[in-house]
Length: 157
Image 1 (tube, one colour):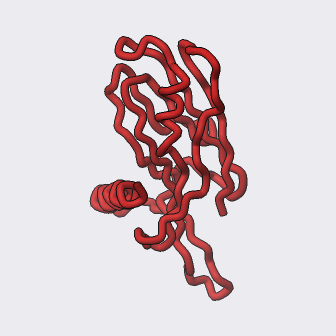
Image 2 (cartoon, one colour; image 1 turned 180 degrees about the vertical axis):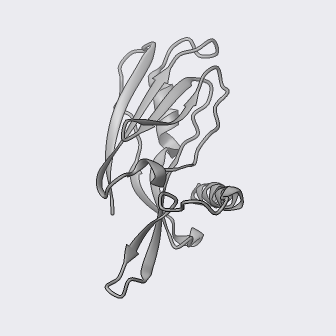
Image 3 (cartoon, helix red, strand yellow; image 1 turned 90 degrees about the vertical axis):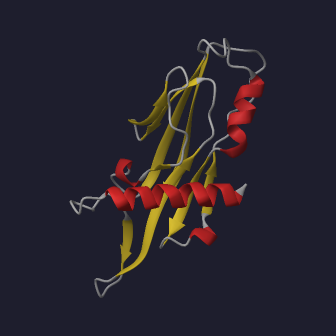
């Protein structure tokens, strides 16, 4: 599974690099700067998920980062750096809703979404050593519901 996430994150970084028009890159990457003023570590944060067959909205720090209605969304990963305005605590909110394909959100659907959803950190584009910062699993529900919302937190430097 880690290999799939590595490939997915690599594709997103490659796509973003090719589409960067050379404008303001301040929000593209978070870098630690040493006393000499030289960037030592470039940090890229990603949210990965494989949400299918239900509607969803994903918010990072209360800003909409991804959504799907009637299965028209793009699965993760999403680069998160542009949604992070300061270091420290960051929030991820997911709203999962029933649609014409899945009439209810069941415990099984939430469990399936939580198998592979997470926040990942990529240091200096070292795709071999992507680190999981936070697993995004929903708390168990006892019965099916029309929609479900949950908020996670993670720390970012």
